[in-house]
Length: 598
Image 1 (cartoon, helix red, strand yellow):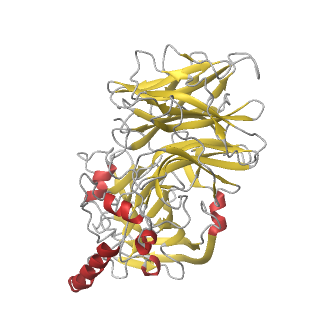
Image 2: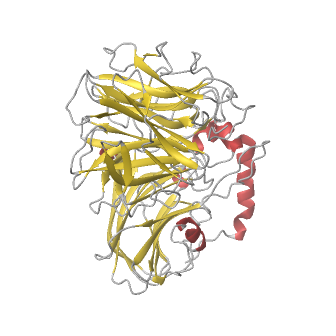
């Protein structure tokens, strides 16, 4: 089955494009000094709405990036996030603040932290929240103190603990709490983690024990998680050795460190230790712009994290998400005994279009995180509250897909939907041979070569999301099974290369072009039952996909100009010679939250 644009569609396409165009430091971000404070008085209405998400978290306008300090406090979920109040590109960063009772509806509050003191006058960058004994929340964040990007660690506390929304925050004058010593790269010294309480062999609650926090950085090309200790949360001492480090990885941003339960589905507070506990250490790599994690043990006496022997600690390691997902932050939700993960997806569109529409960046749907029963990876899944937005439902079952066939899933709003499907197959015999010369750690390259239209044995099969009627545009999310010498390998792809007919070149000086990669990852799953499941959350310009129960997750940002709103279609397809059956497929139109940062 081939999906190609018809040549007689060209004239109509050019008209659409013309109409659209007429109307429409180690800081880790593209810096556009001339655009940082450019806020259009009124973004063109159709440009503003065309690709705006409907059920993902985003402010009404302007730029956002890292989720900061998420926490659950006295029945309220808090999300702080990096925000430019003056424009749709990175700059003028403050900590914006929103609250929710259900992780779905969000109320915008006053900015919590913004540059105002000598210890943060050049910027208030990312950090975390910790709830201290006595139910007292505190924020640790990175402050920029000069035009050389020197970074220090500060704290802020609520002005009024009786305010259920914690609207106002105070930055005491004894800041900064932590300053880099002469052995530390002061421009790569940021993003403190949630602190955890070490018992040191004795149970201490108020006066004993030691608080610990890690801060990301690098020394030359070695990524480092610096470790600091304090008995009172005010006076911090750097440990002799880092919590963890790895050579050749580059700068570590937004580190996260937390325990996970072995053989259990509950989340754990950051300070929990015990026999049935493993630890997750995650970093955002400045060089690759991806996030990597390992699973291991924590030596409490030595304050050292040790990845398990089969873990790859670096660019070829496990990722939370193999697509557009960065600067994530997790927190423990004591209300439902779960660990929740927030991640940011930036725009993959041109800088021109970001400025025209007046907004850039979204927070992805929060995910629960648990340890896979194998103990070798994490499982991620959208929080259950998202299901309250489900509307009209359609179902399919026991439908065969022969080679070259596709089935349209009708009756829902395809551009704003939640689809969950399980595929099955009778045999693995037709799985393609995995060429030993291929790189097992470069799934993205393999996906770009073995796309959704390239006939295979077992696969490609999956979903065509945000598809135009004649398939001039579509974003396929699919599986392809290979047979290697030692086992079967499952490739999962989310391919944005055919997602739009829009010109992807920026016309702005130093502007960034559109980015339309074939994101991919391998799925570590047992195929004995000859089944593969896929769930995709589709929301106008984002497709979040969860393969095999959340073992592999891939997020794509896409910007169709034909497959928009009620002109978008959704298909299940198979381009492999092995017949694939849709065991079950459930799809829902997704409603908007009642409130999204009004």
